[in-house]
Image 1: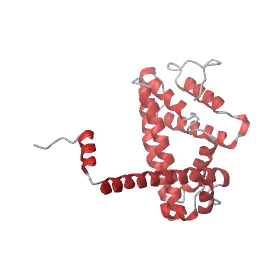
Image 2 (image 1 turned 45 degrees about the vertical axis):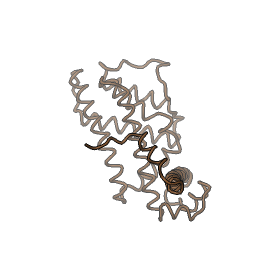
Image 3 (image 1 turned 120 degrees about the horizontal axis):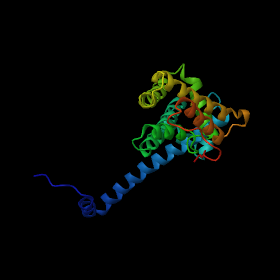
Length: 238
């Protein structure tokens, strides 16, 4: 019969190790944590540089200076600008996916609440700020000629779009609407992306609050039986 390994037994086993072995294990954990911290520092500095300088003007030196680290550290962790940028895009894609999935889960089982939650999540301050919007736009501008970027963005978009299509189909059935779910989902995604672009460009004095209000009014126009027209004071962003 196999013995169950519990955290207490693991700790006891660790205590039974010679001091030198325990020190070596601790150092390994510290190095691993340090590696993750350094990589995150560099990724955040890359986002800053993309927002400030754009894609083509961002260099490894800019990232190192922005992170307050040596240029050798950047090369050690990522080897090249391309690998650093791919890691940055992966980080942003993972962050975005975790954010909308959490919002979707918190909304419960009601499809109307789920769709509203997904729309509102796009204008949360942690995701929707000029710094990250500018970085996304920098990557979008390069995606057409870079298959790796297309794969990263495409996988995220496919899962996200399927949720939209399924929700639009469910709302159509419940409300007796005449639209095609796939077409409505495409329109909804295009509307959200357009609002992100306007926020990034700073045109027409668009704010996160007014962008969310516009998105909610789109929901009211497209799904009138599920979303009453919003009134002044109803719109809130995180």
